[in-house]
Length: 287
Image 1 (cartoon, rainbow, N blue to C red):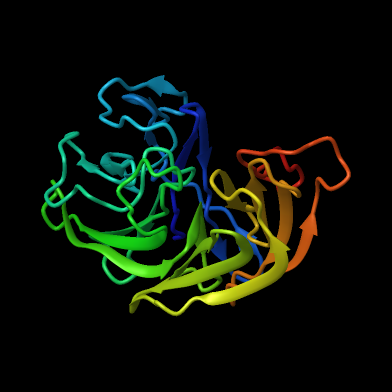
Image 2: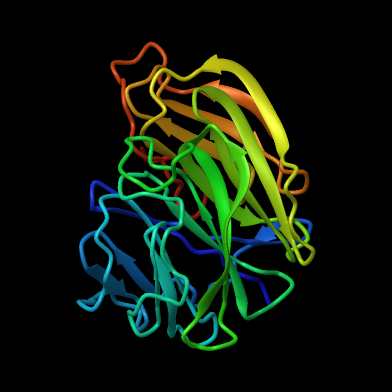
């Protein structure tokens, strides 16, 4: 069976985006499971897709303007936990043990990303991107990860704020690697088009990233987002109030490399983008 990596990003409390992650053989195929059955975001907002039709949830505890993430049981769809990148709430909507003080922030575009630990089915990584507006708890504008254990179903953050790299943007995304057993987690530099791809395997998080660099400085890195296409061959990036504000690149799910920089909005009367996405069949590119 394939795995599913799930993350919600709230842009201005309303934009909710789901990362579908694919299992990769010679070609990549989608395996729908239940990690995405519950979404918690914004100010106490939530949605359930457990019955195939969205239903409102009113028990959420988040109070965030932008990035957040939720994970549910892949077999049953039961809520496991959720986070705004600063606090972690368990399945009972209580603050998880040691679940405060993560290094995201309320106005970080993609504050948090939850990734299953390939080496332990009861553990999950939370990767956090900084709040560049200064509204978060990040201190340095750095990229961190924490580790959640569900050995006790109420959960505990057993390792917190492990530093990976400093001077990163608010942009964060991830996908399965081509083995189907590990993950790639990608962030970018705070002011340059440099991408850092971190490999997550059963051995843990490899702290040495694959670095992909392009000679295109970013004017305003404080908002925007990135997304990998469902077939994991493309990486799209949105920059707010920057030219170019939308960039499309190639992504290699085997090596983690980002290549072939293509600005899409140069010469157009289009100067800002908050987020980007792909249609499930990879044929459309909404901004």
